[in-house]
Amino acid sequence: MKLWGGRFRKEENKLMEEFNKSFDYDNVLYKKDIQGSIAHVYMQIHCNLLTEEEGIAIINGLNKIYEDIENGNLKLEGNYEDIHSFIEINLIQNIGEVGKKLHTARSRNDQVATDMRLYAKEITINIIELIKNFKNTIKEVAYKNDCIMPGYTHLQRAQVVTFKHHLMAYYSMFDRDEKRLKNALEILDESPLGCGALAGTTHNIDRNITKEKLGFKRVVENYIDGVSDRDYLLELMSSFSIIMMHLSRLSEELILWSSQEFKFVEIDDLYTTGSSIMPQKKNPDGAELIRGKTGRVYGNLFGLLTVMKGLPLAYNKDMQEDKEGFFDSANTISMCISIMEKMIATIKINDENMKKAVKHGFLNATEVADYLVKEGVVFRDAHGIVGSIVIYCEDNNKSIEDLSIEELLKFSDVFKKDIYEFIDYENILNKGIKNNLL
Ligand code: ARG
Image (tube, rainbow, N blue to C red; front, side, top):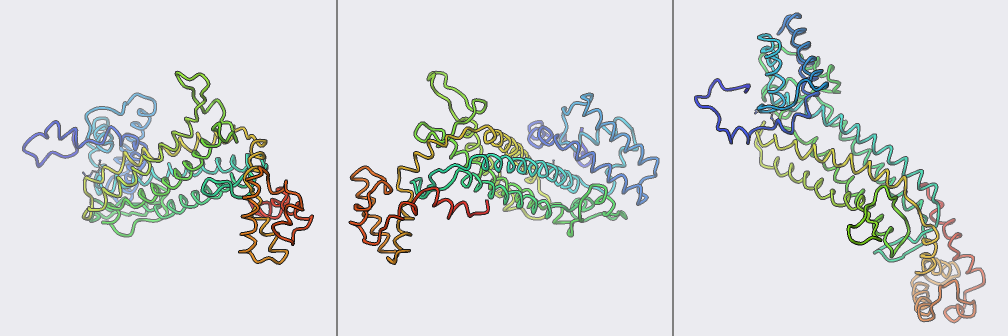
């Protein structure tokens, strides 16, 4: 069951046959392969490579294979080299000699390049939809929880922020991710069908017909490039990696925040698991798995970058290795965005604990320095003064706003009663974070 064999004196070694096969994983391309073939047949008819009658017979045969696969009458299994062989061999078996004309003016190289671009387009459009939905959820949850919380740098309490503002930082990240994917889509939207094996074809074909039928915006400019370019997969996998990095940072925060040490949020039971021995445990496995799976999405990117780095032009069989990693990354990222979206949609925010955490940790120290500056002290001196106030507070187990005006005056004579209003957390937020757009 091969598409080639004419020039061989011996049968392929069995182990080699197994080794060479991609059918086990490229069979997900069946829909795109059939779609690509039908477009090719339309072009063949138009360019007089097939009579209309022949073309219709082939198109009907291809549609029948598609239906049979969809309704389970034709299983994607058997000893086939790849999905392209599977469909062509089944076509010839079903409709006879005329099926042998399908591959006129085409190579598996431009065929697989077309299938993969079509598949990549579809999956990316789906992922963009998932991101849009996730962004909406982030916004909803953020705007519903406009409570105060400590903002961190170095994981040390730094300045007062709101939960809304913190979560909306992720909105901005996923917004850029969406743009990156759209940009990648725009660049990859070119039809490689008609590039042939690498040098086009002597048949008089029309690449614009297949381009139009398949919904590509342009045809690729260079045949050799068209069959050997995998940049678009690398670009998508780079964007996927960045998305996973964002999801992983959010996961890390959810894991920290749901710990007993923080207790800022509670992840819903639906997305947590228990321990087989410790009855009290509720583990944030959903978030941990997302953090963990980030590794394999990075790995797939580096896998393909490495596959491509030493390849001479044009097609080389190494390139068959583009598939498993790409499919795995696309599936992984779709699953991770969906799970994270549900986790965020159902999360419980413990605003009381966040408020308590703000109270302890001198999150208004910067604003005390700002106050001194406003009263004429130079910033570097103000910084030093507030540093001494913090030490004093630590020694006496107090917050800055707990100090009396007499105590404050020991550090600087510019303090007045209005300091308390100036460093009130709500007032700080109103001047700072709440002025922000998101
Ligand atoms: N299964 C192959 C792949 O995924 C299809 C292209 C085969 N082309 C060839 N010249 N052997 O790359």
